[in-house]
Length: 185
Image 1 (tube, rainbow, N blue to C red):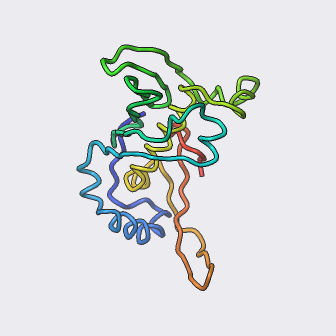
Image 2: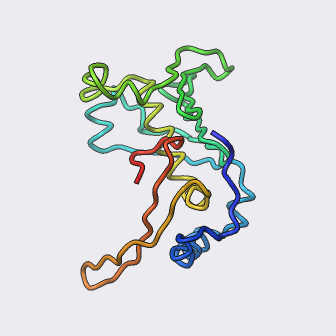
């Protein structure tokens, strides 16, 4: 995947969303600050139904994730256990020792979630499945403002949502196939 594509904010029909998208990015620190960032590091502690039912052990309980903003790349450390790290690199995943020694890898992990191979993944994930999911998910979550500014991501303002006496504006985004994500829309 190429590095994030620069935009001058002029995206034809998507200009409708420019106002709200601009507000969102500004509230998250501003476009210039995001464009200046090359890496983001976060300490992650997570749990819930998915990790308890599909991920053996307590892999997601406590780790650090470092993502690069210019490409879909994330390092989970320690992961899946002390002394190892999980690396998500533009769709491929690997487990390596801290010195970089390769322990195992999967070049096209998303394919393993479908068809006959995907049956096991309905019940349990191995370390590479977990690295794939956490890697693309954390990358998407942590770089969202930059992701929405890319030229190859279609962003429009959706209909307002009302609930509990409040009205909310919303953005609808469509991602190209090259971006690993939960959903293209």
